[in-house]
Length: 156
Image (cartoon, rainbow, N blue to C red; front, top):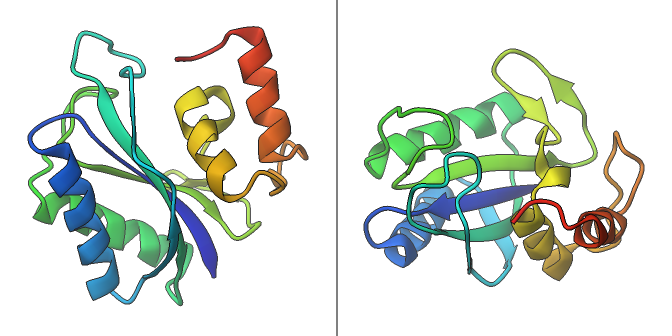
């Protein structure tokens, strides 16, 4: 299954943590097909913290969506992430943005990521990789979502 993950870090050596997360993904049978550039962005939510370094990865995996989530959470823990408050600083954060064109809504997992269409920093990175990809719920391309948020002055 082709999936898209967003990596983010704003504590420690963010560049090294993003690279380490990529290495860990490969060790778990998740193939990285393409990567966006890594970009700094203002913290989303609780803003009294350092800027995040973010990157989007296009990956291929035979894992189910739930198994992919478990792998991402395990990688976060192995790289030192501890459970903190929502939108707080993080050594590493790995979010599943899309799992093919599937829609999943459970207590543990929401795919597509529930708020990606409101996050300029994610849409910028997705634009590098999949501008024509259609959001399976909103029925708009990444380019349309990016243009909507850019024109509205939304997010950071």
